[in-house]
Amino acid sequence: MSAKGSKKRFANGVIAAVITVFFLAHASLGSLSSLVGYTSPFMWLVWVGVAVVAVHVVASVVTSFEQLNDQEHPPSSRKKRHLALKWATGALLAASIVAHILSRRVPAIIIAAPFLPGLSIVVLSAVLAWHICVGMKSLLDDIGLSNRLLMPLRVVVCAFAVVFCLAVFASSAL
Image (cartoon, rainbow, N blue to C red; front, top):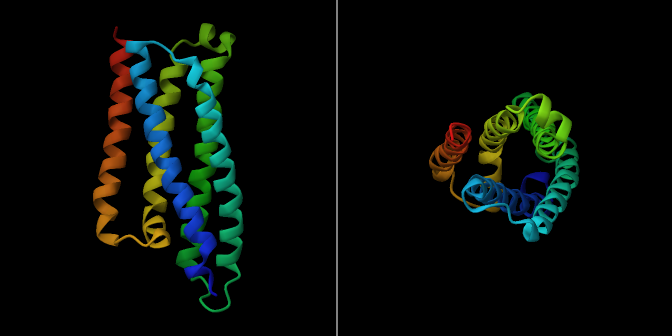
């Protein structure tokens, strides 16, 4: 079987879709936490999300290797560049997540630069939207959805990113 129709790509596509929903839910609840308070009993859900992200990274390594070594449908230079862009945005996303966690959990950072938690959310929202938009066409193909959904889903993802950024600015104005 070629890498293009791989069950591994389908599974990774489903995992990526779940992660997208998880991040949107996490960001939405995080945006509301300033209004309703922090709910630490649900912190374990964040760690479940981290575990699913780790599975996605491993699955992405496997599927990228398959794609690059596919004899039946070898990738074009354009597809290789696109794969490199997905990995680059994924690496930036990982760095933004680490910055977000540190800016929330390290008291010295919060005291020295109180703007960093908000800034980390703005950067994280932008990079997450970029990573999702870059991978959206592949995601739709991998899980068998119509490419007609590409632009509407990209608009929704970018709209969520804008809303989260506005929530940061609104909460810092309080």
